[in-house]
Length: 90
Image (cartoon, rainbow, N blue to C red):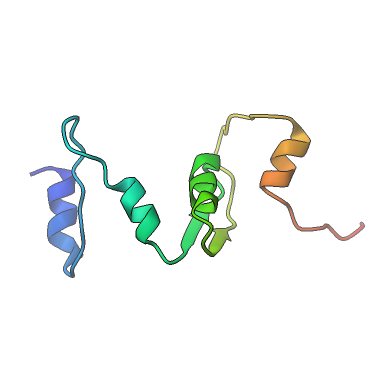
């Protein structure tokens, strides 16, 4: 029994578990099209971009940035993608 089997057995209510296979089609794009809205975290720019591309309501959960996150693009580019709340003057 692997982790996917344990997860599948413990969920308990109706769900869909996709087991990746090199030969099976990936349902990810179909799930994106079927969703009514999206909740994403700020740790993946591609996840945000894919959700935005669907042009449906999007909620971005704020949290701690991932440790040792690679820095891509210039600082203004990153700031535009992940806006930070204004800080009160000290």
